[in-house]
Length: 583
Image (cartoon, helix red, strand yellow):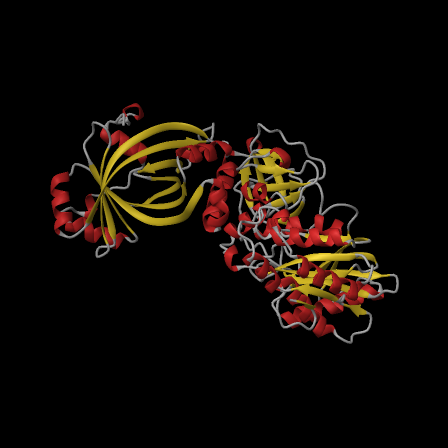
């Protein structure tokens, strides 16, 4: 279970396995070094797990038997003598093409004593079951019971400069190499802190004059990319003799969120900033150290990936340190959180901001025109639906999301009992609903003026946030585009609305008896507001499906209409104050 990681056939986790493949690929190349080392295979981890009765809540729960520890320490002394060591995690669920695990598991630099090394191994093992690992596994539906951990032990390389290389731009996917470097060990680069230098090199035809060792790094990176068949994230270093060291290779995880946001009105005098992760969000801003859920978080000191829950629950991030290739930036992209860099920024906690990680700006919502506010809100909701990740959003009180694109026709002055008889005779499935609605708008009420509706609908046991756009230019049919986000309860929904800078405009209740049929591909809703006659709404994916169902009910499609909510209330002589059953 304790073997040379370059030659072993045992399971040594993704990080060590990738490095083993790179070492074999680069073997014999002059002045290129993959440091030697030994690995504790996953078999060692599994043996200890079987001997443990309780969970590994902390490293103190990891009991390494005396005989096993003596074997480990003997192997270390024989391989490395008294040299300083790096002891690194190599989990089976990190460094994959689907998720990086960047910074999620423990690793240790510059240690040498038996006590230091033993505690490092214990902490690495326990980190597979840490709170961070728990959240990370929930996001990516990883079954930790089926995962394991290996440990990679190497000699600390005598580097004078080190850093990270990406074989393409992780934000734009442009075909260029990006290198971030610092003096000494590369901890500043992966943490996004300190004095970091960045080079951007055209992949095919660089005009930059590079030192021989950086030219060698670029050439090696291109070869490794071709060898693996995907774009790679490489941790590297160089020493006083210009030897190039390769410490880690893993796939680049991209934020593939796509959007083309066309603001209706010009965005004048907006300064743009460096983007670390794409996306768009709206919300209040709080310092990272004190933020709760559904906030844009702002860097207020050291910020890293160890507080993963706050990153998950955040809407986006504003940093004052620009580490594009850091672990933090990697995780932001992996979780599709918009992130920009603003070095001097003091947010107002009472203001609601638009963070546009596509165009690289941050602005108070109140400083936007009404048209641009509405555009930003709808773009935010659409992205939330189109890129919904249940693993992430479960921590924010959201369950699922989907969109609807349908047509509807309304008929007044109908005989509800006769309609019901016909529907049941034709095998439509009945479902009775008491629907409670809370409507929202911006303080200037511009959404409703534009035919846009945003509300919370509580239907039976389901609570959803709904955005609705109405198109009434189709004669007696109405075209609806709906985005729906299911949330845990009404309290969660209201909090989300208020965090968007919206305010409540009314509460309504109505009874709906819904009849649906796969044969007719339609739903017929018999709708009744308090103390008013019923009317029906026939919904379908096409107007042809609606016409077929309307004729089945003995009605003429030409007599149908496409009223908005205001027109329905006027037809029924109904006021908002009358719209509650008191239930």
